Image (tube, rainbow, N blue to C red; front, top):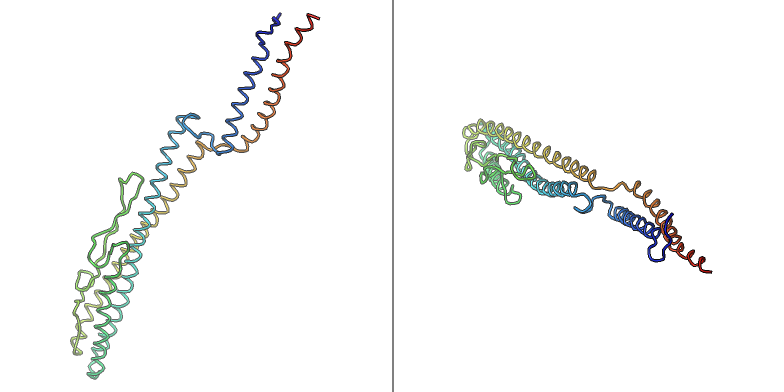
Amino acid sequence: MPVNSVNTNVGAMIALQNLNKTNTDLQTTQNRINTGLKVGSAKDDGAAFAIAQSQRSTVSSLDAVKDSLSRATSVVDVASSAGESVSDMLTQLKEKALAASDTSLDSTSRSALKADFESIRDQITKTLTNASFNGINLVDGSQGSVTALANADGSSVLTVAAQNLSLGGSIVTLASNASFSTASSAGALLSTLDSSINSVSAALAKLGTSSKAVDNHLEFVGKLQDSITAGIGNLVDADLAKESAKLQALQTKQQLGIQALSIANQSTSTVLSLFR
């Protein structure tokens, strides 16, 4: 038979312990609802928190990778646009040279074609000189290649080779001072122009392939980042529907605990009846 004592109320002690446990669980649930996290610190789950922090670092690093790839894409896009303009201008030069190679053409008309030819020729150099992005130019011969980060720890890179489209180079073999004054000299430029046009087309194809590779990797990095973020969520995110139901249950349990403690505290008053 339990001992009735005013000094030690065992029932109240047990009720208080249970109430404190309920209050602790309630606070934990409220924190999860407020933050949306079931693991908000190392105290909640050290292993899960450490893994999540490591993966958050990777996600953050992948932002830098995406920025690097985006810059590389912009560099290649500018180079490609310049290359397309050069190809168009080479085609115009061929048209001028072909027209000037007509022996029936009078000297005045040939001189006008020569002036147009030289103007377009000089415009090629201007176009190439201004085809830079972020200080990088892949078509004027000043740059050998451009690299972009490919992974979160910087151990892998993507490289896009430059295509030197400068006049008098290995791709555009037309000399920077090329011109004509007679029908025969104009005709002599046609083979050079044909070769240059074909070579520029090949160079543009290489730039296009490289640009596609960078775009594909940028898309992959974005998907990888999303997958890692989802994985982090699986580790640390709280199930709010579950926590909401748990909150209601704990609030009810808290109220019952308070009542149980109140009843336990009143139990010692029955001792007074023994002395009436």
